[in-house]
Amino acid sequence: MTSIDTITTPTGTWPVSDLGPVSGGRAYLFGLASRPTWWSVCIVRYAVPGDTSVGERSYALSVSGVETSLSVLNGSMKCIDNGEPIAPSMDRLRAAVTAKRVLPYSSAAFAGWATSPTLAADRTAENEIGYIPGRIYGRSGMNNAIAYAVTGAGGEYGSSRGFISGDDAVMIAAALAGNSAVFNDAAEQNRVQTLYGLSLPNLAIWSENHNLLRDPQIPFSGDKAYVNEGTSTKFDNFGNEGEWCAPAAYSWLSQISATAGTCYSHARDEAHLFNHGYAYWLATGDPRAAILQQAIAAYALASVYQGAYSDGRYRTRFGYQRNTMNVWTAAWKLQDVAENASSSNGSMIWPKARAQKMVDDVLADWKTQLAAMDAGTSVYQQSSSIFRGVDINTDSAYSNFMIQLYGPEAAYLWASRGEPAMLKRIAENMVVRFGRIGGTRGVYGKGSGSGFKILEGTVMPYTDVDSFVAWTNDGNVLPADSFEGAAQHTVQRAYWSLKLAKDAVSRGWMSAVPGLDDAILKMEAARSKAAPTKDTGVVGWKHAAVNF
Image 1 (cartoon, rainbow, N blue to C red):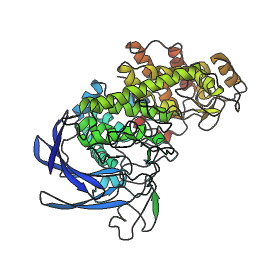
Image 2 (image 1 turned 90 degrees about the vertical axis):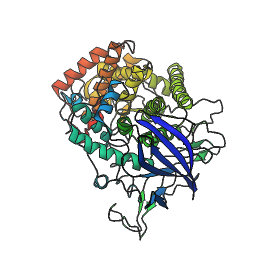
Image 3 (image 1 turned 60 degrees about the vertical axis):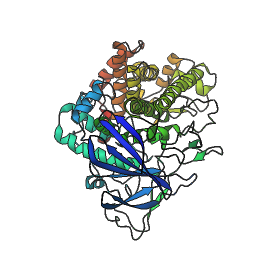
Image 4 (image 1 turned 90 degrees about the horizontal axis):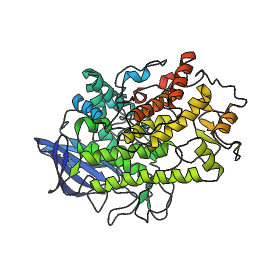
């Protein structure tokens, strides 16, 4: 055992030792200076390029006389400890909101709307069992001990869709409400989610040359860049997490409701970026939670598969809206970790300068690509620009939900730090849709399903915002003065996108957005006439973010 580093977080100093190589990976020992008897052993299992299998490897351990085992999936980190090192604190979460590290989540977000969720932790049966280091996190990405649907399956779920998970949001809302019973239940849930989150296949891609997560875009010496979407002949490929097939002699079949010999999907994608563990990090300062947030950021950056990064700059996604928004979300959490966790020797936690460069570069890259789109001459560039889209759309319809469900929280936080460009763009889009068009028509436009039509095939039958609004209104039977037939969560988050923007303007974080106040008033009038009542069953606490 070799001492390699000391990590410092707001809750203490955490010595880390290298326990040496293990089969296909490496083992580390975490401690906490203020609690000399606490320990956590974490084993990282290296990812294998091109390997899409989800296979477990069991490691036998003996720590302080305790005999146990760890089951570790490919491309992950699995930890075991002798208890929670730092008790999650409502005060720490309240302080994080005060410090503008995260938004407040409050029942005020639902005032005036048809449905308001009950403040309670929504735990899966496996989550209530607790964290079991010796087994897989669950039989599949849909059914597991973290949350329902950590996959890219269609649907609006509390997990892996948006700035933070619904479970993180409940933990924050309970802290702000002073509800200790709900907070404690949510904190237990979030601890299980954080530890199992690190164990997801091909999420924590660890370096074989450094005691760190690999950097997917500008690799550390001896490492190689990697991608998890698309394919590359130049980089390592770690996409499509594949299936886990339940062994006949598996001890946990009953506990995870698996059938021997049956194979279960664990595929994930960056569009549905894993979003658990941030509230737990804020509430505990546990460095393992910090590593999880960096692993999530790496996963987002690895989805940028277009071309090499030979000029030494990080790139962002600029298409499919939630992909673009997810990079901004990941960048916010990455910067928070960089500002609140450090390592004395540059191990375990990415150096602050590198993390800050990642953040600065991806934000700058988005601005550059947005300016190019706005100045472009193709129908895709022009239509996306007139619509005030946050990125380019290369088919006939723009998403009618991704901007408001994936973007406003991170954009508002970034505005509070002197980066208002994304929030302003979101507000401009909402003004066009709900100020100029209005009502349910502003949700769906001329489209159907999840698409807001902005082209007629490959033809753009308008030249500016005014003619776009006229074209959208022409022959449109959807109401423009009410939200009849619309979904609450989609409309509600559009409303709060405008409210967050208005607050940012009032605080001087952002310049005025023409039509902003009128759009808010028009949405309120439409809601009064007919509130959106479609899909109210999916309204949850992740939709509860409000302004400071």
